[in-house]
Length: 297
View 1 (cartoon, one colour):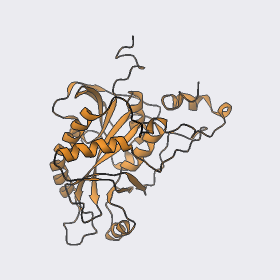
View 2 (view 1 turned 120 degrees about the horizontal axis):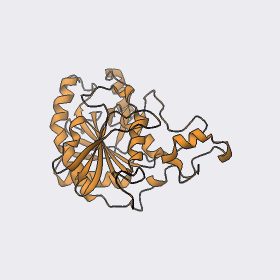
View 3 (view 1 turned 90 degrees about the vertical axis):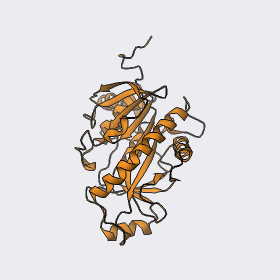
View 4 (view 1 turned 180 degrees about the horizontal axis):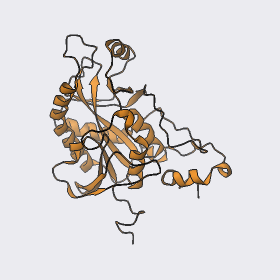
């Protein structure tokens, strides 16, 4: 029988990706740290693994404890691959964001279902002798979004289901001209991290959904207070308890298996285009956790 110290034994089934304080959820037990080394280098921090609502969960702070990493400095590849190594099948991502719509107010929560990626870092697990092209038309898990949205509504929170998250490189916030252009493009919220995470989760065949905590109106609304770190942190601290409540309720509601509307577990099926006998052995080794069920060593 597999044991918890066996690397083949799943240590967690649900991943939670967010800020430093997110793993301080009431009711979590048996918490321990697991610091991993992946083929893509070290993740942002150690994973905190524990039991929440009877489910094994793994928490990771994307910016590192103490918020040490800029968005462009985050090792997104290692973060998502580390979750895969732990056996995680679903990731709930909690992100702060700015609003680009009047009706989406600061301290609201948005469950985005589309992304517009303007970041300059092109992150993919593939390359270096192994090519694959994922389908990304529907970038989040519909089952996971439904459960998160239902949790927010049940808690009586101001929540919005759907919408487009535009991802910018940062670390600077937008100019007014940029912010107004993004509104004309039909984007709903703006951030710096979720689009990259969503793409990598699709490649890793992990269900992904993002809980966007609205902190401000970006800078398109001239009469509103100018976006600043102080404003963001004030509104984020007020919303983080709501995020914890949503995560806890959603974890309790998640089915043990993926539903018929979820295709995330087949994210790279038929997507690998490299001729099998030309795939370098080192690529097979590097991506073992992603491709083993499709390509044998």
